[in-house]
Length: 494
Image (cartoon, rainbow, N blue to C red; front, top):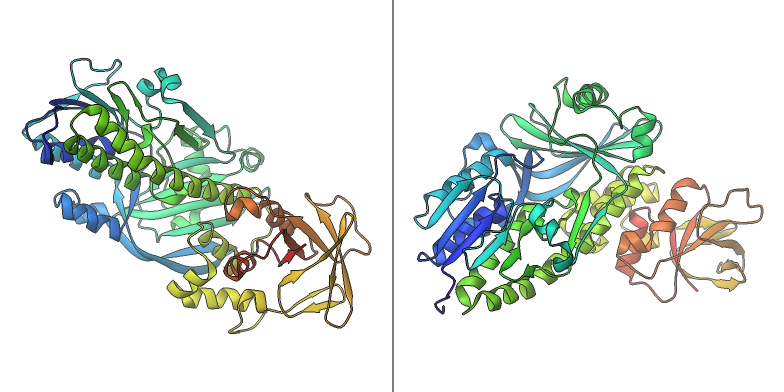
């Protein structure tokens, strides 16, 4: 390690990004003066989620960081999705929920114990001047970053759905609750984060909330209404709002993460949708990487450049995955058919990594039940090999070729029978005599959810089979994934 000339660092924000930046700098550069600014008000949320793998990696560097009282922890290896009263288990593979308040307070205490860290409890309205480097780790709504939005190239995009982040004094199993309430579904993301408390996030389309009279309620009124709607799931426990009313999730992207002697970390630099459960992990990894770059490089400029070149590609990939997750939940909240195991499979496979083959390897019982629902019986067949009847054509294999004829396409069976398909990009508004299936082009951009969005939506509101049209052969594993997750009924190459 080379001796870095950075002798003073101001860290604005004492959440996970700021606190771990201070802790790691104090460990690596004990001669550096560190000011850690902590504001009085706390951010939204009740619990955070960490994977067991990440927790072990963190303990190997900062053994004290996760030494919290057992009352502030909960762990699980399985998630339940409840759809129309049906409980569908699927693996989570080692997760922990942690009390946000307890964790943040613990980190601030650890940082304050470091000899070269001075914890300052006040809001920062102007950049500290007498310091070699300023780290802005003051959250997604950072005012200091907002004042320099042009320099950072900041963009903030609001999602379609609205959410209310709440907690309940009850230990809930980690679950997704999909509750059909008439105008549309209410989707709950719930998990325990302490021995006697759980996180309870309700997400929905604003039209659904408006139809239910929930959208414009005060937080206190919404707590009571939602506790009544979910009385059975909560076993009568109350709800407490942790955000001020229904909010759209805002995705923060910065074209560059530094401006002069100021650098961004954590949510100030980027946000990812809460459905990914990775916001805290990304913030901590930012902090550790930044501190190590400061210690390893001979100037603040070189350190910041190395930090950005290391972390930005990782975050961009995670934000792309988070955009797919956001899109999936927006599509779900927009309505359409709920199909039990297949809907859960779609939930699990919204990440590109979770293909049919990977999920079958990691969670074989769940995948076997999903394919059985598709086939109508227990079977060893993969989704593409489950027979399907389209009009008068019986196909034994759902990866097919079709012949285009103007705005239509034809599927031919091995016996010479033909099925007529209509190529559409939205749900037809009238009956279609003589049409046996609808064919929807895959979008060329985005991930699995985005590419199949139109097909999945149309499939959810029509009784006709839907074929996802692709220009070249799709890998068998990807076709299996799309069919098992009810994104399409078959995959057709023109």
